[in-house]
Image: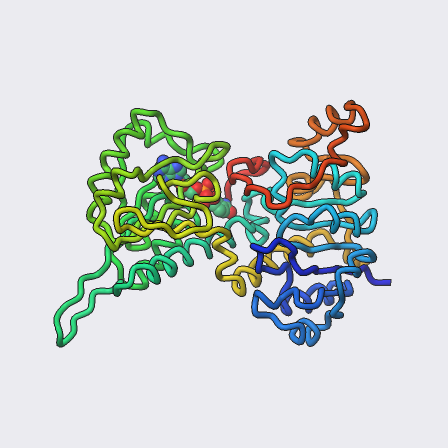
Length: 414
Ligand SMILES: NC(=O)c1ccc[n+]([C@@H]2O[C@H](COP(=O)([O-])OP(=O)(O)OC[C@H]3O[C@@H](n4cnc5c(N)ncnc54)[C@H](O)[C@@H]3O)[C@@H](O)[C@H]2O)c1
């Protein structure tokens, strides 16, 4: 009998995405699975039940989780959801496990093979499964759309019979996946774009998108990239030089989009209240790092605030603001991973513990915590008195998002 894949409706109120699309449902059925989608799971991603039905899925309810062999989710399940899963089932989602060993232990105690997609190594083979990139890319795009909506003026230069409107000046801070997409999007909308980053490799990428690169290019800058391609935390001296450069530049900008993150550290503070005070009233600042401590002083998670006439946008779950596209890409990332896990002969999931993608993403298996980043904590907690066992502590309801930096670098750069 075919194994069943279940796609529940996300229970976290801030999550409009869904872990499958009609396209991936068809492909999952093509691999030999039967697929059940919870009623209304795609509604907030603009996918009606009828489209999942037409793709071959059965439309079910939350209770279908009980008989599923594989559960696909966007966010981690709540404790009550977890209790409804079948022992031995595979759970594939962005489980956001860092800082929460108790929840990882709970997956093991529930007998789940739990995979966390954010840990997918950034190697060529796994690019199609890279949820961080697919979602950050959309966040970069959406940041520009949100900024343009708040700006209330046109972005491109316009020469009209009534006179000329100048192009908006957009400054992007942090030119990783999100920042590069923000640069491309602002350029498409006709803005004059400048960008900064601490990684020298970003200079050429910014230029290739038509942006002008601005940075303190000293000796420290030349060595600011880790072997994994991420930024290092910069010295106080560098930060001071960077702040002086930014302060001067930012005062002339109409829109600032910040995306800067550092592995294992809180987001760097790049825009101070003094810098905001130097900006023209009516300018807009979007802080994409707000969920990880924020790049902008005064930015508030989930809010648009105004300081001295400058709007500071701190939306949460920015990929979720473009949920239909975010779900489509996330679903493809998951499908690509499931395809590699599926045994062609038995048409069932077969977890090869020697596969580097499995090693990097598998948190728990056969009742144990198997991921090296959590196994030690799990062993220590097993020695605690029964009343203290983490599995009995409640699962966090709305976890803080893991910093990218926490992602173990299990593979090399592509
Ligand atoms: N090979 C692959 O499949 C793959 C996929 C995605 C990303 N990458 C690479 O990984 C790297 C990181 O990308 P990411 O988007 O995940 O990064 P990220 O989300 O960790 O950080 C965003 C950006 O902020 C920058 N930053 C940090 N501190 C800063 C500061 N003080 N001032 C200005 N900028 C600062 C970082 O250098 C980075 O470019 C890039 O080199 C990217 O090309 C590779």
